[in-house]
Length: 396
Image (cartoon, rainbow, N blue to C red; front, side, top):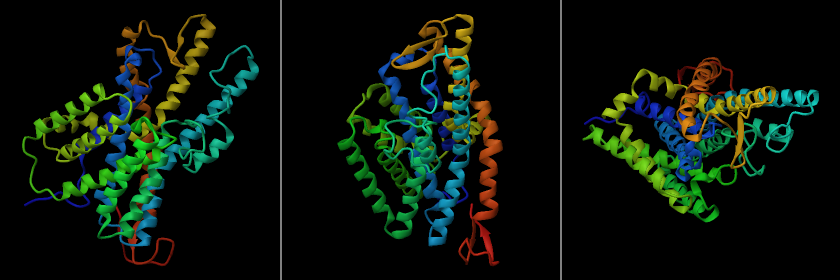
């Protein structure tokens, strides 16, 4: 009888799934006027964020479920999560502030140029720089998205992961029932508080994250209890992807969106076996790389799009061409008709973002992770803040 190893196993299909979902989020936010922008079901691509939350809970429980046994472990865990999520967030925030400074300077030099929004106004205010630095921008302190909009989920996930670790430390033998209670309570609260549970972000996004992260922990616990391979894995994988696609097409905005969660949980459980034909495709070199770069893909795309829209707006003004259009209160780039623009939008989602994400991973994410592994997270008989030497072993 074989079971998945507790710490060392790498879920390659799930890594690729995270990368694919990150790219779908990029496509959802692509500021091009294409045909899908008018399709109501297109908005359901936002469910990819819920895939991230469930995946995070699964991976965190796999890596730390049996390793968080003391307060020192918890402090190391918090520091490691912070260094995993915050450095890239800080860099992107700094770039967005610089972009607003550039807009401010240009607007003063050319008073005839109409900005989409005034630099450092609502959503980009100085106060919101402070809340973003503290990962607090998504706790109802602002009326909407702030600076790097997609970063709301990383901010929420950081604090929910602290709760995740706290539950394991407080209930070392009974944490799984607490996971279940928190997941159910979050789901019921979302249904009561918001008309579209899985579109909650800066209002009730914390409940959405609690639901996903703790559900992911439960999925991992279930996966650990199962011995042997998954039978008919290819059929299961195809069925899960087909089910998620059907839900995305058919489920309207509203309370029924909560049905996405069990489908996502089954999907992640099935792909954790890495056993079917789709998993073999997911293990391809390109998709594995996309999985490695997924956090960068997710975190940098809003900045890339802001720069691109600003540049195209300037180009249109200089040439007298109509290169942009307002559609549903959003400035979008025109590339022919909406039908003709669909394929270019898909291509641009990859070309504009993925190469830059590879660079930010190499120069920002990976150095931060290396520092955390080498300097801060050795498991020791002494607290991590005590400089006295002690026998240690690495905490992966």
